[in-house]
Structure formats: C-alpha cells, structure tokens
Image (cartoon, rainbow, N blue to C red; front, top):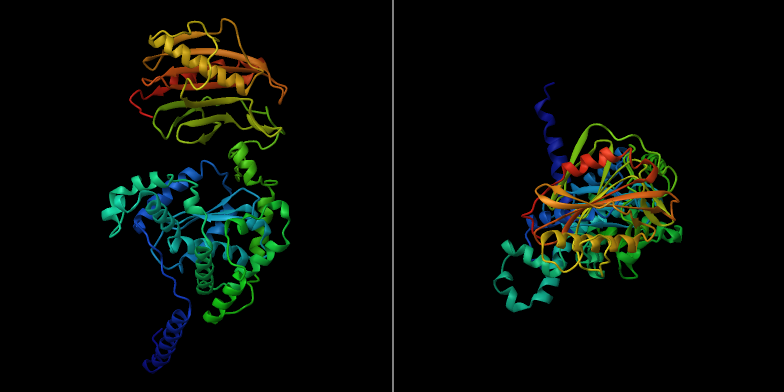
Length: 496
C-alpha cells in the first residue's frame, strides 16, 4: 500500500533519535582493548578448530537436538553483538555435572550440562555464554599464548615477529606453548582478563535484550547449589571480590534494567529432556574413564553402568570403514557397531551394550580395539616362541608382540595366553602374528576370549587389533574377526 509522502518525516526523526541514543550508549560503556597478540584473527579460527577437534576426543557431548537447539539459539543471539572479529561461533553442551564452561580461540564454546541443570532462568544461561563469548571476541586465548611464547622464546627468537603477526611460524609457537587441545594457556585466565570478560559480557547481554543482572543472578545461584556438583566456574574463573559490584556498575553505565530475565519455560523443558539421560558424570569421572558417557537422542552412546552389558544384537552383514585420523591404518567393521575414537590413532569399535563401566573400570565385553604401540617399554616375557635378540623382521615382531602381551597382562592379570594359539600370516604385505588369551574377568565375572593381531611397521612399532568376546561365543564371532583382520590396510610410509 502506498504511504502518503508527508508521513515520512516522523519515522526518519525517530530513526535519527534512536541512532543518537545508541551512539551515546556505546560511548557510555567501558571501552576494552584487546591485548598484545602475535596471531591474526584467522589464526584464532584455525587454532580453535584444531583445539576443538582434540577436545571433543576427550569430552562426552550431548547429542540431543532439543538441548543443542536451545543453547545455540541463545548463543547465536548473543554472538550477533559480540563485537571484534567476525568469528564463526559454535556452542556445544558437555555431558558433565560440573558447573563450568570454556571457550577456545576463534569461536568454539562449550557449556557443561551442570550449568543448564542449575540455572533458574534463561538469562543465567545467557550470562555464562556471554562471558565465554567475550573471551573469544577479546581474543584472550591467543593473547595468553603470545605472552607465553614471548616468555619462553626470548626476544632474540621473536626478532621480526614482534612487529607483525606469526604468519608461517604458527606451528612453532604452538609447539613451544604446549600445542592445541585443552591447553591451560587457552582456558585459564587471570583476574584482569576475567574482569574484562565480565564487563564485555555484561555489554553483550544488554545489546542482546538480556540484562547484566542475569550474570549476577548466576553468581547468586552458585552460592546455593549442591556443593557435590563441584562448582569449578568460580575456581576456573578467578576474579576480584567486587566482581558483582563491577558488573552492576557497568549496568548503570549502560542504563539498562537491573531485573533478571524471567523466561523459564524453555529452560524447564530442556532440563526435563536432559533428565532422560540419567545423572551426568563429573569431569573427574571423565578424566579417569574417558568420554564413555556421551548422551544421544538415539541409542548410540556407550553404556555407563553394568546394567545392560552383554545384551547385544547380532553383527550386521553390512560393513563400514574406519580410517584413523593419523592415516596409519584403515579397518572395516559391522555397520551396527559404534565407533569410540581416542586420540589420532586409537579406536574402540563395539556393539551397543558391548561396553560398560563396572567398579570404576571401563570393560569391553564385545568389540575390537585398534591402536598403535611403541614397544620395548616393558620387560618382555617369552609368551611366544622365537623371542630373543635376533635382528630378523620376524624375531623383531615376536619381541614387540611379547612386549605388548606383557602390558596387556599387567593391566588384566586374569588373562593367560592359550597354548598353541599363535599363528603367523601375511597382512597387507607384511608379516603378522596372532595369539589368543582367555580368563575370567573378576570385574564382570565373564570368561573372556581376547585375540590379539599384531603387524609391525618399518620403525618396529606395532599396529594391533584386540578382539574381545565372551569365551562361549568366540566361535560365533570368528567370522567377524576374520573379516576385520582381512580388511586391515596399513600405511608403511607413516612416520611417528
């Protein structure tokens, strides 16, 4: 519909007034400058992506569509007002009960399930996310990495770098400070940087339609929460005693409400949805047992208790291929088995119900473990014939396999090598050894059959496959083991 021309002036006047007010608001807030940094914004993105990949191998993520949609809706709303470089922010939930969150350079942000479980309204969740977004926008992670490198490398090495960016020396700098992943350089900040994140987080909240009071509200929630949840947010985010007062001061500069957000309906629905997965483990549990409790909206996560262990469906007749990120090997496996990757080389592949935690120990009842092994770290016993100091390839393989068997028996002393079970055969162009062990696991009380296949690399390291089943079902799974072994492809040019 056509608008009369004489009405155009009023909206224009309103727009000019709004622009004037927003400019005044921006000038009123505390101005924060990013610190010394050897890295470019693009370096932040690349470092963050590499660190996220490493982190997610160690952390159980909530793979629930409703939970992830909720956190990403809030995060995206805040990120639009983050300021600084246009980073590709990503938000994921870690299935851990600890009340904590962390950000990696360039955009990856992780919030523990404990934060969402403990929050009293949507604004409290937003307050935590805004704080972490501020760390990313102000580039605190690579700022700390730059300072750490300068302290360790010395000015003579920094030379021409101080005047510009790292450029092609990124890998060198990262190596000096300890590499990517859950590196403390990226995760733990001093009081000055935490105060900056509080102030900038308050600004982001206000610009996004929330209130700085939401961040304060979360601190009050931490005062009343169950101490067993290990409120690491405070220990990992140190700040001066006047932290709340500083946020409230910034709110006055921003001239925004001091009333917390009251939206709770969506939060309650998400809390109820997460409750379907049972209690989340602590980060200490995860560090001890590995990321064995990843929650999913399907039935794709490993077992987290002894309940249900051993209740597995028959192996599928269709197969998939797993290739290790390191590129050293590839192996096929039944398509209804799940892949639980560890690091750049290790993997456990098992059916649902084939893995479980019993007595604080993760047990594999059905499945296969494939990994790389650097031998001669133990005192080898002569489990297999042919061990000795011979320089032949076959003797070296025997020595290395005996060394691995010594390690296995050290970890699982109930296992014994079965007499006459040793075989030597060709595997992808090289000699391989096979041997079987059995014994009653004192934890699960199941008599196990463990078959080990070893194949030596040119540097005398091993690629090995451990295949585990209950003893009484070993013959039923023999064809699966045989197919997996025949499918293995090994890159003999790989260097460690």
